[in-house]
Image (cartoon, rainbow, N blue to C red):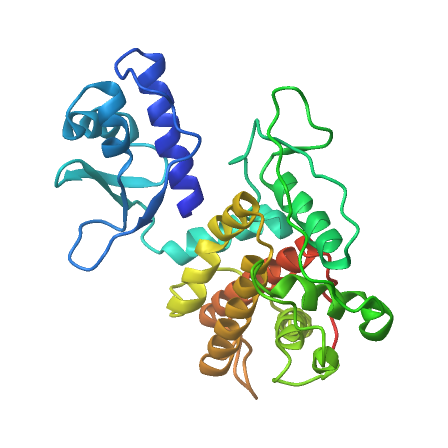
Length: 331
């Protein structure tokens, strides 16, 4: 179970309680869950009961107990505990969370992280002419659709979302850098920052200094590992625990990063996430062999490490696709 899955499970519990007339409060659009802080209990915590207590006219702990009864026993949840003024604390059932994570990425493919958090939202954009604003608008529309928002003409009661034009970029940018590097230059900067288009020929450098190259090379390396494994007669299969906390955390957080990028209309969040995933993959790749060496036979460890590497590649490819950037299998 991923954080996004847990969030949806808690949200369904809220809806169920409201439908049963046990809880009289408006159902929130989304429920936020976060990793338990040091000293806390369980693996994840949620403060939705405190949010609903006022509208429901009930103590937060009572609201939490109502929700606990409807979440306990749900698939993937091992235990739910109420602590403090009304925090819900969750322990997941999976003995190895990376196993569940790898399976979730495999099931979702490059659409892993797409969700329905913006279901019911209708978004439309005012026409823009400036280069960066056009690229950002087109990318934001793709991110919104990935979260189930309807993007099109504004309706009488629909929500109007604006992308504010930003300082002009070089108009020969796409001719000089090509589509992939140009889009990265325009999308990587935060909305309040100027895009680094002057001197951005560095995005064409095929080396570690180029963040775009590192992201795309990380993906290409995952594909090379899969091809090499096939030549050696084995495929990825998660069979035993893999020690890769940084990479696992980033992959688990990917759905929330995509959702936040859509909500705030900030594609740069996706670019930064991909950079972090690429770095974590390289660290994992250098620390633990995904392929046997010499006369060594493929083992469960190799298959499991390869499965996690392939999951990282899937996330990188999906993220690049949302940014409108290609993910070549060979670099």
